[in-house]
Length: 70
Image (tube, rainbow, N blue to C red; front, side, top):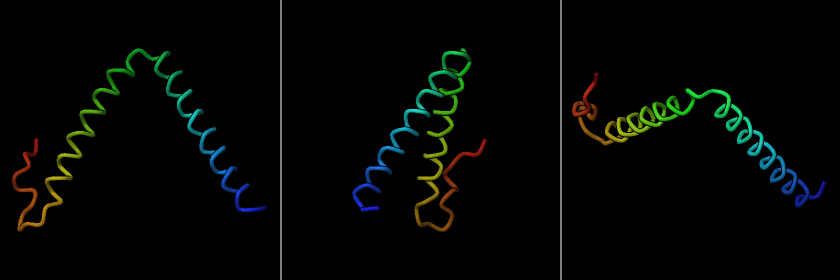
C-alpha cells in the first residue's frame, strides 16, 4: 500500500476514534447528572497533581520539602 494511503488511513481512524470518544462522553454526561461534579473534582485533582509535579521537578537537595502534604 502506498505511503499516502497509509497516512490517510491513520488520519481517518484517528478521527473515527475521536468522534467515538466524544459521543461516549456526551452520552455519559447526559445519562448521569453526577458526572459534571466528578469532572470538576477531577480537574481540581489534575491541577494539584500538576503543581506537585512542577514543584518536585526542580533540582535541589529536597525538592518536595516546600509542598504541603495533606
